[in-house]
Length: 354
Figure 1 (cartoon, one colour):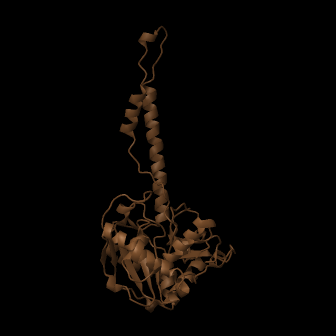
Figure 2 (tube, rainbow, N blue to C red):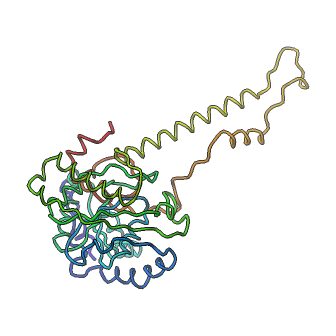
Figure 3 (cartoon, helix red, strand yellow):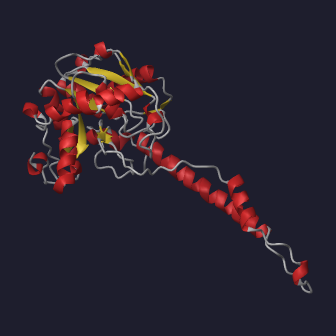
């Protein structure tokens, strides 16, 4: 696999090699992983539950719009199907050198990832073209409309890129929900518990009636909301009418503020226990200073435990929802990048961030 062919280096073009995987490239590795190396092991250990598989066409193109709870989503969802599902991944995973770079390129290509150069302002157009090219080949294209993993298990507002892709391609959208993957591999952990995740595929959604309204932002928003509602009915999550990256950042800032306030409270307690020396006092009259053990006990009582958000292993940065219309955002999202941001205008108007 030629890395120069995979990723264009023009930062303004947002160009992409959507032909990755054509003519069987990488497919042999995919089927080896699915049927021999990883698939049988994952099925035996986790025993995933699959519902509505008959809603996914056995041939021909379709868009799988998926909720995003964990990096394990893009492992267990394709495992339920006998067809390869292609996602978008950042180009960095396809340009490494040496043995590690070669292995990384083969793995991501073999597991159905297509590289996108997201360094320029037109990267969202590259993601759209990649999705269209994959669908034109009659394949399944997976997209995460939320744009990043949910940090609290709730379902967040979808980006309109999935709607743009559906109207431009004219193919059906299969709402897809995963349940339990965030318990198996929560943020910051490769594996937390062994349990059976559930993968649900809903009835196909047809938006051909809007075929001539692909530039109408109200139509795009209406289609996206319909897709997210279908996912919600499958997953049973609580819905939040806010973009996931903005909500994640607000939660992070709130946690940091809480830590500061709690530290100040403990500091005030320590100062209140400090000895007060008055004129004429002797060493024996001084108030006893708090011991290290006492301070530790106060800290334990005052500071709640927080789960670390950094694990020993980083999740592969699959281009989730934000790839298609929000690529140039600088919001610190965790790792993924695979849907929905085909619409910069929608982002500019609706993104709640300053």
